[in-house]
Image 1 (cartoon, each protein chain N blue to C red):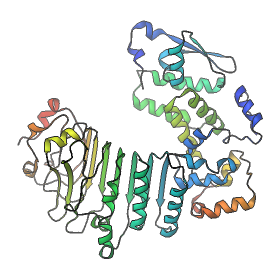
Image 2: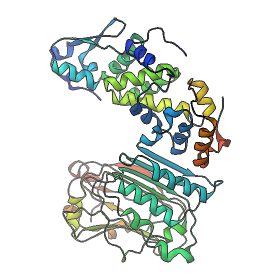
Image 3: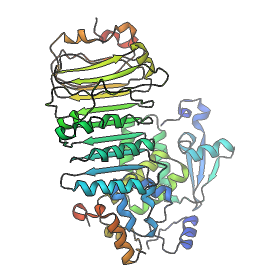
Image 4: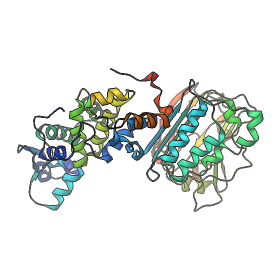
Length: 327
Length: 167
């Protein structure tokens, strides 16, 4: 065993108590599990075989992080993850990340999101590149992906990345949905990297604070019109006031847009758009409501200067009003 | 993280604290740096005495923690500089040194440093074979071969060693 020249008394005492003390095992559970929380779950579980000391330490990590690579078996991945979810310490999950490079069953996705929702995670990231057989599964999965997310009432960070048309097609229809409640959401990232071939692929996320039960906010990615619109339904002004914790919105979409984006939320700090720009002037028709109705911070991205890859940080309306388009 | 003390009246700015390690050596630290540690802040709030004795942190570790605290209490440094200082701070350090650092930062409740050090320790273990970790950290394998085989069997999916390093 390596000895340190100036080892503290307490550490020496600990060593005496603990006959097989080594450099890592001496750390208390709380610190060991903190260290393991920086590892992906698979690596964290591998530590269980180091010695008896590590048998259950991975269990205390507050993060879950799974990746399914293209070369790996879906069946064994699913049973592995399901087993981990069954076994781990149930009370302390804060982060859940899952990255899928192959298709998984919708039951499996459901199980993961259910788990995240039940444990009130604050941070959820789903990277999905899966291929679902649309014609066979559409019926089943249309109730799937987004309705799953509806249960995530405690989530503060939600990042969803969907890469294939199949997944987009599996998302629910606008009319069929009831509002989603994201009371604590402060970061929302929604990415669609490869674009879609389907004619109409609506996605919507409703941010629906409990105090104003009739308001919903909807993203409508409608490919048929090649438009991307941010729609507000219900009492528009109330929506602005009542999504106070939404701070960051990022949207990436490869298709050319004919309409512009408009975001107005009190706590919004940054709004990122990456994509093709519409012909000049189009944005003006798409403003969902007069600017004078907006409260607090306001963001508007004008796409009239060529293709844009840009992040704009927001300023308060009084200081940044000259940058805003006139209706 | 910058304390208000730095911007406060001159008297507050000049205040300093003496911290004594378990080896008996004393370190003079500005109060604005000391209060970045939640534990030290609590101690300073409770007692007038400007001498704090830390019975379980040695000289070498304490000096490192104090260097970190002083840098982070420096208003003149940008957040970017502080971030690169953090990276520099943990790079190239022995695992054993990191272990004492993580213990000390846990005791002193210096959350950011605890985070940085724990992450660094995890990075060292990342993608390594179990045998490598055991060897490197002198971990005594106290499983019976049967028990170890059983654990590996149950989580078989975690044991695909193809991508793991053993150097």
